[in-house]
Image (cartoon, rainbow, N blue to C red; front, side):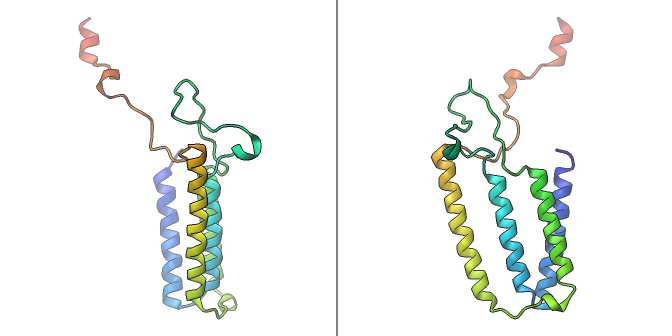
Length: 158
């Protein structure tokens, strides 16, 4: 995927602008809550397989059988996850430009409910991962050390 780090740096900058905007204005908590719920929904889609093995009766790819290679296919690909998350943050920034959207709410209750919702949702997602034995995050291509590297000097001497 092209410009991976640049895209996520842009998202981080946009999100930081939004957080600072809400912090200094001391308002727009309901928009922050809605943004948080939407980003949580996107995260769950990113971590979930495209085909649910419970509903379809299929098995997910695992590392236990090396002969059976099937890549993990996400319900929400990384680029769409980034794009929709960035769009949501831009919309939230635009909504903070109007005082009409600054509804008076008691923000500690919203924060406590969001934290509770986050942990319960992630607990269910992790249980699903453990039940079906899959890890949705790959940390790059598998390497096998020096045994697979070709030494150019040895090849030219032969």
